[in-house]
Image (cartoon, rainbow, N blue to C red; front, side, top):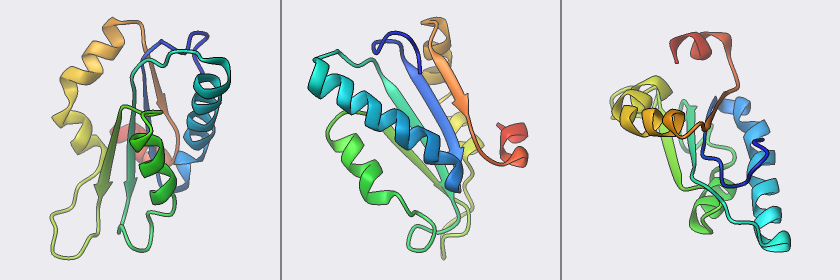
Length: 121
C-alpha cells in the first residue's frame, strides 16, 4: 500500500484476484479506526461471472463501501443471466477520467488476478 493513507488508489481484480485488496481494505479500516488516519479515495473494480455464485466477498465489499473504507465499488458481471456481458476493462473505460485523475495525483493502480484480464486492462 502507499506510504500515506491519503494517497488515492485503484484496485483491479477478478474473482479470487481480489483477495490482496481485501487485506488492503482491512488495513485501511484499521488505520482509520485505531490510528485516526484520514483515508484518500480508493476505488475497487471487481469482476466475476455471476453475482449469486461467484461474488464470494459481496458482503465484505459492501461493508467496506458503506463504511467509506473504499470510495467506490465497481462490479462487472460477465455471465449474469439476461444481462449483457460486462468486464472490468469495460468499467474502466466508463470511468477513464477517474483513472486519469488518480494517476495525475500520483496515486497507485494495482492489478491482481488472471493474466488475460491483466493484459486486457
